[in-house]
Image (tube, rainbow, N blue to C red):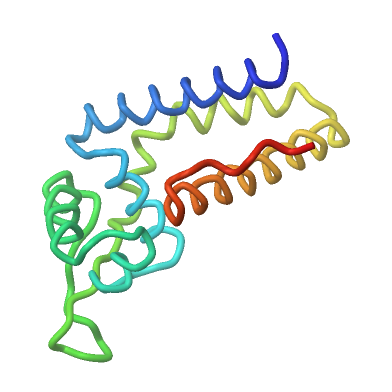
Length: 149
């Protein structure tokens, strides 16, 4: 198996995992992405969230409805402007679904030396950068970046 095969297999496994999480919770992959953003950045208004994940405010309303029904977020008045609502992650709610994955990944990481973990970490960070750039290019131009030299 070469690097392309590893990448394809990894991508397929990640998508399948998130589909299973979504089926268990009744949320979509985009909903999960939004929740990860909210959990990472803290409470966001619908407008801020829409901008972050490139959705319309109306789509964010439906997304927030699904996440709220699943018990993953709550809507609260914005302390800075009571006319607006912020969407906050419910502490620990999403983590329950990921607890098994977290434990398994910790066990996997423990198999590697600190030096090997640094190399793996570098690969993951660079892979994320490539994926973000390709996503940006597809979103902006509708075409993938041309192959390198």
